[in-house]
Length: 221
Image (cartoon, rainbow, N blue to C red; front, side, top):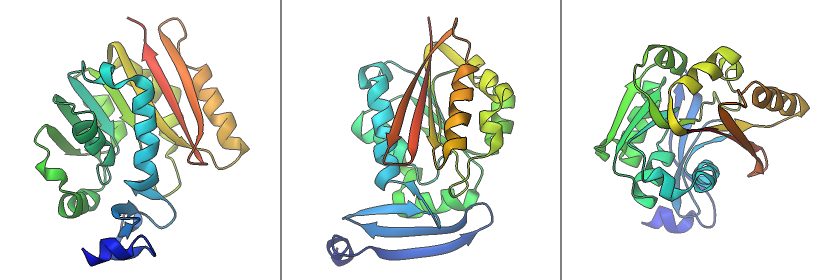
């Protein structure tokens, strides 16, 4: 494909649309791959896929292959789903929760997300879904952004406690956060301090792709 070839020289935008939830959504050929971006940040594939892949490697691919249900809060273009299915060869159930239905339409059209049979996509607010779900999960991946903004509820203790109750024994939370200033550093350290250290271990993977920090929580069996 000629656009793919030229994208190694200069990014080539092939789709652009305003979204009520995500402002501007763009699909671009960049360095030989399709990426999904909003106005100010990468949403799927590209750097975001590298960030979440790094977090999954830290948990351990061998551990992930033993899991039977993964919850993804924030699907976007589905790059972490592709990492799970194509690279790790995870075969079990994935539930993806995405508030922006337009984002899923784009993910289906450009990234063939609807061809992944083990993936169930739920169009819902992540906070509401977490309150309602009766399932428990081996891994909960939190990757929720509105452009560069992260909703405040993600860092509230009530939401943290609820997420932790949804974990099976030896389950993990992989939380992708963005650090743009010192206030964000303080926010993340406060978040870590509120995890029950008698039931869970925590780990921080700082400064991935410059502005991202991953928080990993593990429920002690």
